Length: 98
Image 1 (cartoon, rainbow, N blue to C red):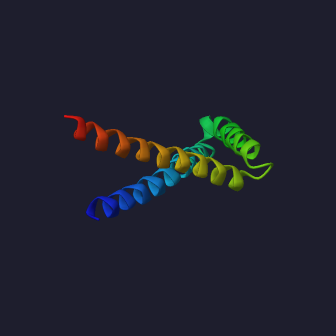
Image 2: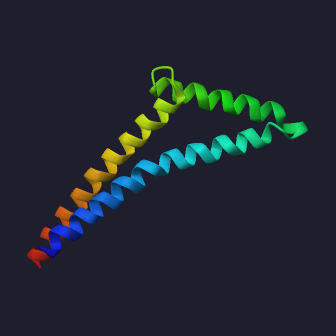
């Protein structure tokens, strides 16, 4: 019973962390580019970068950048979920063979 509860906690934490990581990274890059937009020598770079990020996210979100972030988050969460299941399976049966 203890293995199952630790497995479920591990799956939940991995899925949550895998979901939030791309949103935080994209948000951080977006914030840095917005700040660069206010620096006189780098204003063009900041404006161009924010437009490019919004266009990139709009591709995944069918025209909506927020939906793009959610889609990327869900995709990363699914990958993290399956990786945690694989990791549990591999080390659970690897230890029983020795």
